Image: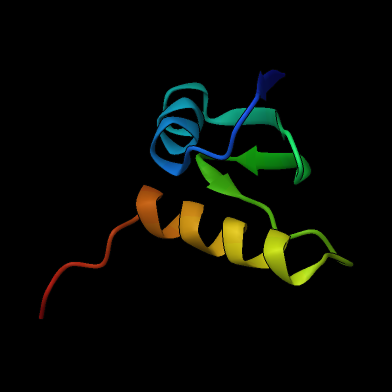
Length: 66
C-alpha cells in the first residue's frame, strides 16, 4: 500500500501500472484498490471518488483514435 499526499493522476496511474495489484491511499479521497492495473469502483462512493477512478482508468488504458 502506498500513500500519496496529493492527487497526482499520472503518478498514481504509473504506480498501478507497475505493481498491477494493491491499494493506494490518497489524501482527501481515501483508499482505492486496483487489480490487474485497473482501479476498482467502490460500491458506494462520492462523486469525486467516482470521477477520480474514471480518470485514473482512462490514463491506464487510453482509447486509440478510430
